[in-house]
Image (tube, rainbow, N blue to C red; front, side, top):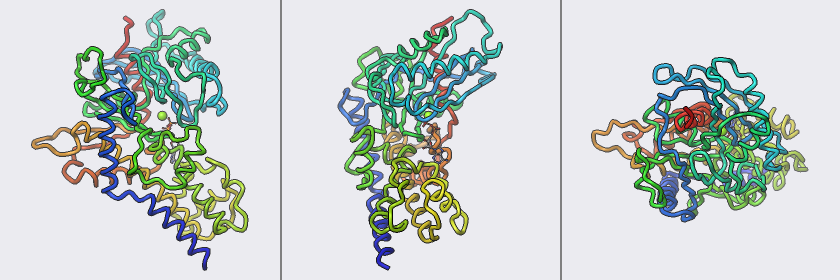
Length: 463
Ligand code: ADP
Ligand code: MG
């Protein structure tokens, strides 16, 4: 009947607008490489911030001692400590605690957020066993993974440029993250030195390198998305400090803010953007990352409900609630292998109060999830190609057996199997058979936190 024809039409139109054929992906990758060059040439000269991390040496494996780390960058935050035993022993012991950030703190004041963090840290420190604190009297060292755009002034200081991923704390913009954290730690009566400030990409890169010397880049696919890589210091015209001894510098690409006319954007993406906390910003991130994929699907369903009464005569109230459909939910529906799509049925019931959907409708929903996830995964693959091109690792050179490893972290990549499979196969498709043999994606579970601890260790100024 007419309703089904119109439903099909909405679906096909959406699919067409989301299409990311190989040619388009190459254009995206090329545009990213171009923007990377521009961002390295001058401050503010590109859509990509290409932030200098001031990390010019990555962990070697020789680091020793006990170190703390904090990881803040999305819905949860983690406190951890590691005991490092040097070359042979590696990580002797590692403990971690994860805490959910109360939503009101994401949009409150700087002091409230940092007090909460420091308080959780203090609680965690109080559970420390003796082996972590062998030499009494020595100040504890901490590495802080803070995954929002920061203008980095040194390895242990940086000011907040802007908030992303649903955070918005106005009085913290322009403040030094390490100063704010240190003040909050003092307010807790804790004696701790913040020795490294990094974001999750740098942390993941450092953590990945600790275990594998071939790691040259890191990508995050979680609530948000971003990447970092090792650049030759000579290739950074905007760097006017001393050339680091290593000749290298880790760059935080901040690729979430990439945008280009080549990106396959739809009216649903525009609506999501306009209604977001950061309209006009983080366009690439809004196409790819876990915070947004579910809501894109919801928006298309909303349109179907309104235009063709897809879920009955009235649009279900809950379906109109932004972000009610989360990415883990669409992953579960997308992964549903039951013949009657039972998981889809129960998600609709439990989340949206929509009961008794036909199999045909459930199939439409699975297809929507597939379209949205496929577009995101393919664009993420194009982003990786952009970086590989920049460092000349996207093609095979003669006699080149050099492996290129990309450390990957984030709940989206880790749990959304169809997304990660699509990303890997698209990457191989873009690289071609030969080059893809030398390029490996390695899941670095929780690498971001431990990486900050490792950088605090390798940059430690304490005896
Ligand atoms: P963060 O990015 O906040 O530091 P994570 O790396 O743990 O944290 O990623 C969490 C994000 O990963 C969630 O916001 C969600 O979007 C996504 N995610 C988590 N679990 C799943 C899942 N099962 N399927 C799809 N996406 C998931
Ligand atoms: Mg994270």
